[in-house]
Each structure stands twice: as C-alpha cells, then as structure tokens.
Image 1 (cartoon, rainbow, N blue to C red):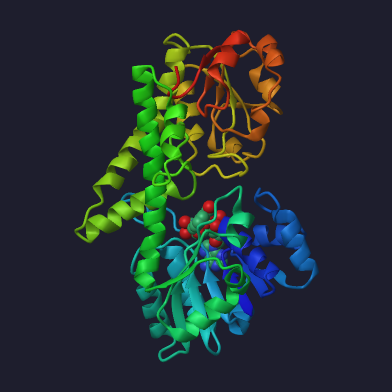
Image 2: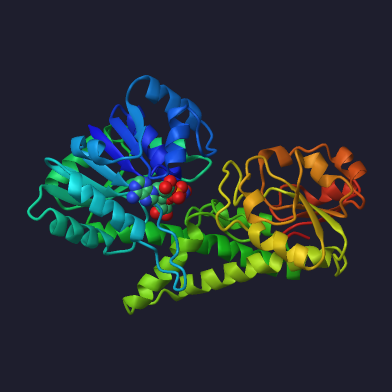
Length: 433
Ligand SMILES: NC(=O)c1ccc[n+]([C@@H]2O[C@H](COP(=O)([O-])OP(=O)(O)OC[C@H]3O[C@@H](n4cnc5c(N)ncnc54)[C@H](O)[C@@H]3O)[C@@H](O)[C@H]2O)c1
C-alpha cells in the first residue's frame, strides 16, 4: 500500500518507519524543512532507541522517503495518516486542533481516487466528524473515508510498541476503509494481535480513556507513597503487594515526582474539558490533574526539606531532566517545575542528562555537565529526577568522594535505602522509610 504520513514527529516518524518495515511504501511529510533536511541526510531528529537503523534500512530499500510538500504523496496514497501535534490550547486546556484541521484541508485538496484518511494524532471525540465536514466542503462527493486509529506507543520503547502492540484500535464502520486498515496492519493480523473495529467516536474516546486511566494509576500510587511515608510503610512493597493481583497489574505503580511528558498532562486536561462540555464530568480525572500538578510543584519543597530547610547558596546536582528515560522529550517534564523552584529558593543547580539537550533552552542558569560524576562534584545534594539506566549503577564511592555532603534525594527509588545508608549516604526517596 502507499502511505502518506502528515507530521514526522515522535509518532509520525516511528509509525512511518514501521509501516515501511511492514512492506508498505511510505512518505513522511513535515512542514519543518530543517527536520526533513536532516532526515534526508540520514540524521534522526529525535532520540528513540533503534530508530536510526530502522529508518536507514527502509530508506535504503526504497520504502521510506521524506518530503516537505504533501501533494504528490497524498495524490498517490491509499492511506493518509494525520500525525501532527495536538497540544493543550492556551487558556482552556482543550486540545488545539488547528494543526489537524490544517492538515485535513491540505489533504482534501489533493486526494485522488479512494483514499482513507486516518487520525493517528490523539483527538477529542467528534474530531473525525469535523474532518469529514472539511473534506465534504473542499471535495464535495469525494471518494474517501475518515478513520480513527489512535496510537498507544510509548517513547523509549516505541518501535517494539508499534510492531508488537497489545492491541490496535480502528474506528470506522466503512467496509472499504476496514479492508485498507486490515491490509496496513497485515503483519499484526498474522501475529494474532487483537484488532478492535469500533465506531469512530468510540475509538477516539478509547485513547483518552487509556491515558486517563494510566495517569490516574500513577497518581494513585503517588498518593499511597505519601501515605506510606507518613505511616512508616514502604510503597515499593505495597506496589508489589497489590501489583501481583491480576486485577490490578504491576505496571504504572512506580511512585515518583508526578507524571509528565507529551501525552498524559495534555490528554487528561483535554478529557476533562471534553467531558465538562458534554455535561458528563470525569471527576476522578479532574482530581488526578490537580493532584499531579500539586505534586510536581511540591517536589522542590521535599528536596529543600531534606537539605535542612534552606538551599540559599547551596549547590544541587541533578541527574536526569527528560520526562522519562530513553527519550529526549522534555515536554511537561517534572524537572521543569523542580529546577526553577530550587533556583528561586537560592540554589545553584548543575545537571546532567544523556539526551535532554532541549533543557538548555528551557531551563535558565543551569550549569550543564558532561556526565553524572561532574554533576555530583562539590554538590551539597544529588537529586535523581529521571531514572536513566546509567544512573542505576554509579560508582557510589566515587560519587560520595566528589560531593561536598553525601545527601542523595532519589525521586525514582532506583537505589535501596539500606545499601545507600550502609555506604554512608544520607539517602531520601519516595514513600520508603
Ligand atoms: N509522543 C508520544 O509518545 C505519543 C504517543 C501516542 C500518541 N501521540 C499523539 O500523536 C500526535 C503527535 O505527537 P508527537 O509527539 O509525534 O508530536 P510532535 O510535535 O513530535 O510532531 C508533530 C509534527 O507535525 C508537524 N506538523 C504540524 N502540522 C503539519 C502539517 N500541516 N503538515 C506537515 N507536518 C505538520 C510538526 O512540524 C511536527 O514535526 C499527538 O496528537 C500526540 O498526542 C503521541
């Protein structure tokens, strides 16, 4: 099949490369000419494990190419995916659909022959109807179908998630479009991946329900962590104790500084807005949003308290700035709340992140270091904000020697309290005695 992917960001590039690897002929399109120029030179604009090899192989074998203009690829395509951003709209938190609608206008003007237009972007219920209205206006009586096919991949494990998903959700009742979607996902069909055909609205809402549930699960364990801390219990053992229950499941039960990233914050907020507008509020998710926002803001206070109540003039080493490991994505990362709050309280911050280069634009007056040991040097405290694997096996004796005071505040619980204390650290973590 011939595929056009409009938007070549985290989702568009991974999905496009994976569809090419399934054997389809894919053009990934982006308005950002710099991004496309880099891709054409064989450079990958984002950090995602395995993506460089996957892209290079499919380009070499002639199944994947890049363009800034969509006209030709869309004209030739059997399937056109919309994978542009849907950030929070300033002011009200609703999903900003301007990029999606602009893409739909562009596609409408160019399609030729029966074409399936598929939203991979996360879009509120009813967006497919709006896209249909745009197509109808620009190309009355055209030969097309609009499908919702939300993406569930996680950054950092995106290729595996795309190629071996727990399920694929396809929202369309159009039989011709269903046949195209079956063909696109044929390798998964053969693997017996569950492919759920639903109505378009059901599919759109399924994506928000999934993200809202996961955000709520994280927020739940974070609150249990605070309670455990107050009561002298251990949240990690509690998470294991409940997670082994098949009805609950062990994933997304790691207590931490609050969820961030490119999806949960904006999608929970958008769901709250959609639900309020529909007159059917989702109060659990409203509370999740509030609790998580407050938590991210409270983390600096936790660090300041661990440092005796004042950080004025003190040097804090920070390990990890991205919202999670194995990505360079800084969107809504907890570090963006924590670091400025520490600086506002008078701390001098030095930091290291293996891939979070964008932090240099987003954080001011931070001394960016080339490695974890440099970030620990002369520090009065070392704070672990993101659990990159390389921070799990640090030479702790070296760290202790480098630091001015051996205080470690571990917001990801990657070390064991007893071991850290045995090594002479003043060690604080989340929800553990
Ligand atoms: N990042 C994730 O982990 C993830 C996971 C699942 C779903 N999603 C959803 O997928 C969508 C895309 O997310 P992302 O993280 O890939 O965003 P992104 O910001 O990384 O990429 C979006 C890209 O679209 C381009 N673009 C915008 N308008 C365009 C147009 N008219 N024509 C061509 N290109 C255009 C932008 O230049 C940008 O490169 C969002 O709705 C998001 O919620 C993201």
